[in-house]
Length: 139
Image (cartoon, rainbow, N blue to C red):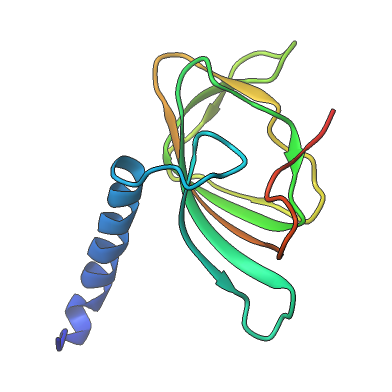
């Protein structure tokens, strides 16, 4: 299919959006380390033996707790639908729609509960060591 140059950004955005929506609502959980995560794609990272790229979606409902963890590689997340989260002993904070998050190898993150009445929906990409657990929960 031939797409005019001026229409390409809209075409790409539509395809990406359709993929995110499909992933959020239609795919079963494929045995991930987090019950909220739905894996979309997984592939070896070209040129980096022993590394893989994993794209996922996740929905955290009010009351869900997301344990403190690390990854054996990098995680980047895009907030598809924002909401409020609360770290134990701290005030609730917003996680705004459209925010981008990035966590480097072995950086502890999460350890919060979703609060309020809006689920938080994420699209994540992990570039991690192949064969290691995606989530390594911490104390």
